[in-house]
Length: 214
Image 1 (cartoon, rainbow, N blue to C red):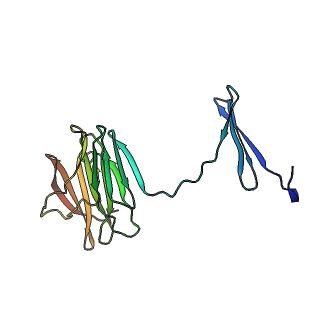
Image 2 (cartoon, rainbow, N blue to C red; image 1 turned 135 degrees about the vertical axis):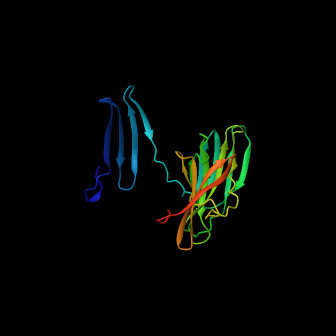
Image 3 (cartoon, one colour; image 1 turned 90 degrees about the horizontal axis):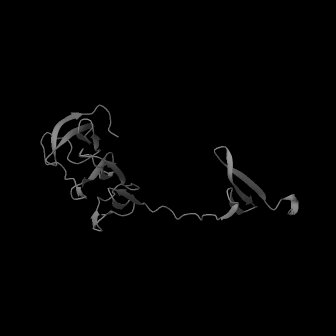
């Protein structure tokens, strides 16, 4: 039945589901003037009909993120709070505090990599530095397979040869088993290279970068 001005009540669409060249089922919906109605799926092998319902719009993303790594559920927030939670397989729960997001409109980034080159992925979080916000300051948690827990990687001890005083813009070179950090001092960008010795970072060398670090 048509509405006034010749407008139809709805338009019906049907799609066939093709698997291995054969029709295995059919989808259908009716598009009205304002709504989608009468949506269903007809399964081919037994002609059973399933009604489909519209999924309501989800609430705005609140920044909560969860990872499952080595059987551990890791919970944190990209935007609004600094709480970090490790929920271990043995039911132990560790609640920690991550560095605050200082830059207006900034967001916490997350990273998974084998930072100490022991064959097990670790987890890290980074935020823009509190100064000009031109590099990322890292907080790294190393996974200890013996105890099946994550431990905070301590920043390297003061070294008069190192140019950076923080774990900034961290990158891991798996081939060379080296960890690199970079920062800006004045108008120059510097990179420090570190190796692990007895689970501690030991300075290897420093060099000036020819291009601005990203």
